[in-house]
Length: 195
Image (cartoon, rainbow, N blue to C red; front, side, top):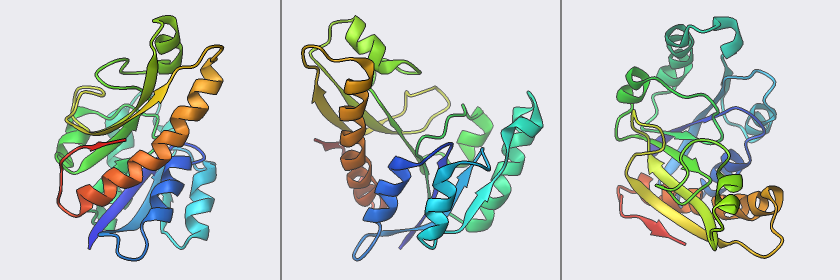
């Protein structure tokens, strides 16, 4: 059974999708949900589901990312995770932090990587006139949104789409893709999931 820590910044809808899937014969179990925001709604949701939670407010560290990450590492390391999942964690992690979990940290991104790394993915897809959008799960590396792909789900762009309407359809796809990838990954299978 793989021990899974999940990092969030907000409400944690992807976190909830992962937690709801980690039951029964799943090869992983959540041991911690941590956030950089003590007010993140996802913390209360995880606690209600019986998962340990921790919060380290990044705002108290100013621009000292190393000090913030050192504080964030404490509850993560105490939970002894085999896998760390970023699920709406909106802080860019330093290469030193990423290296500590190399080959064991996953992230979900709302585009068909390598297209549109970073922010504003839906606006960029619409501006480019793309016929489809989607989401990707990848291993986290020091380079932003550039790690090996572990899965993708495609979503059509339809006439009249706005950033919000496209984002809603992509988010629904994320809730299917991320649990499917984590289930396979925790079982030791790194072959990509295509939805």
